[in-house]
Amino acid sequence: MSNENITQEEIMAIYPKVAEMIADALGCDVENVKPDASLINDLGAESIDFLDIIFRLERGFKVKIPRGKIVEQARGALSEAEFESGGVISEAGAARLRVFLSEVPADRFKTPLKSAEIPKLFTTETFCKLVLRQQRAAAEAPPAA
Image (cartoon, rainbow, N blue to C red; front, side):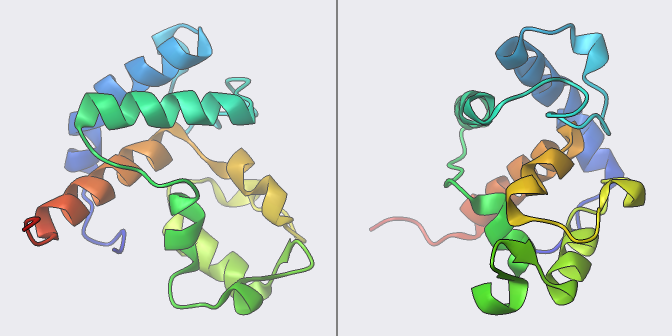
């Protein structure tokens, strides 16, 4: 599922609800949860907080978000070996991430980028796009027999 067909209007339609859920999970003021805020660097999220945020988004938007979905979708057609080697993102992988995470300011992409640092890139808007992708995937899925 690509970003090209996710509009800013779609993102802004769900943004207030996503921001509220992130603020609740992190115990911060919703005013601090800006679209481009890095959940880790700006809002102080830790890895355990991501699980809480995902859980809240799943409940609030009635979607299923498998663990590791953002990185898996970002990798696209690249194999794991093409995407990263020895815990470091390849040039091709970094190029895919820049396209997939188009909402992330370019200066946040460090070179070399370690795969463990990818969550530091995630913004509030990243989670809005994740919800929208999962809603579309659910709508496109054939009904269970």
